[in-house]
Length: 632
Image (tube, rainbow, N blue to C red; front, side, top):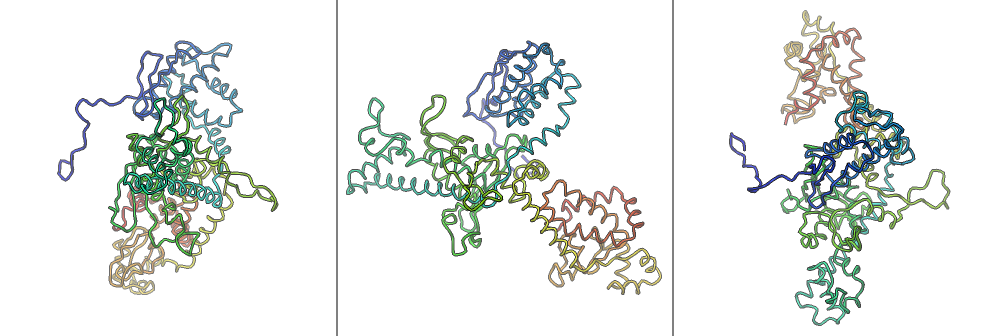
């Protein structure tokens, strides 16, 4: 609580609360993993089964505990299983050597290379190598040579990963995927709402005059809603009248979402938000409505969880509906079915899923957004309600829908199109490609880990970037050049201030203030801030100082050169950590203007200005580019 007042006490756990641990050692070689998700089962991983020396077994077990400890990166059971699987695979390889290492300090980089060569035919080889490197980094007692090699960047690994990565979908392919998913979701909503309405009519007694079959369907729909099952005989078989109306699967899926329909919802949410698979499939149903259901633009805020982000794992994600004035990109005659159902926005998809899964969510006592009915299940689970989703559902949906890919280059009109392999990873990459904005990661990660390895629309993207750059450069050329006082004019102003001032459209008093740095606006000085083109006449200008580069009220003097150099260099540096299109749209114009300014300046003056840059100049430039100097 804020000691100054104005806050409220933080919520505290109830008395007797003990935090749930995720990993603890039963014995030195048997590690009990307790997933962070309480719905996942615990599991014991036995490192005594590894075919290496007892000393290495213990070292690998300690490394596993380090990776799965509270606050560690591995929080899900599937992640822990994968880590153990690679420890076991590496141990199996070491056991085949003529002289296997016996201690952690005996492990060498050549052992990792040998394990990799045995797995070189795997398509996911470099992902597996990266996982094994992470495992070994956590192992205590390694020799300095191997430890140094593991901590170095693996350029070959990164390059191979980019080479093997699937490209994004084209705009047309992405639209076909979304259209197919929306079709499935729309049909699911119509079916479930009809069943719910029929059940309500039966409960209200409104089906008394209907045929017996219709009354039975209403009774059955109400029973399935309340019990997530059908009426059965004492022996567990569906009652005779239930069998007459259809199969158990048909009755359950009349009221609940099916596996392929929940896959369609996941596809829409990933494709429209750019969030990754686990974040969406583990999303909660709970949300806040900042709009207060008061009309206007509807919105919801959902707290999503991305464990790999560590302390920044929890994030509030706003989902906003389209304003009513925003028309459809494809239908200018009026709102289409996607707009009417809200399926053109992540807000609409989220709220529809929240509605359709509300009943089964209540039956399970779950807070998960994704709840659906499975016809069968692995591990002897059988049919029943499920939460979440996995890649197998997306794969099944892709195989069932057989969405055509774009024709191959040079293909004839009679060529049969291939069918798309729909994956959430490629959908997310497509979102990044189309929106050019990071989602739960930095712009550097967006550029280096997503866009750089995307080969799908490279030529088209390059054309878009080139067009944006050309427009911004043309804009810079069309603006009047910033008026600049040279060093000779500064010297002349000492004797003839009125003459120099008139030459640059100001009076002598304003010139003196400009040269005394009293009118500075970071990279220039402003000689008439009450008559700016960026503000109403007679009102002080509140525009960003970046706009001074093209403002008729701005004047530059020699003492502005250090900051002009610093800002120009930083804008150039941002090409590395910003997407090309975003850089072109945000920074190409001021970068071109500053280039022109420095080209017009005397080269010796520029060199002297660069040498005269002080820490104060750097701090001011950093604050300016961080937008700390913008007026609210």
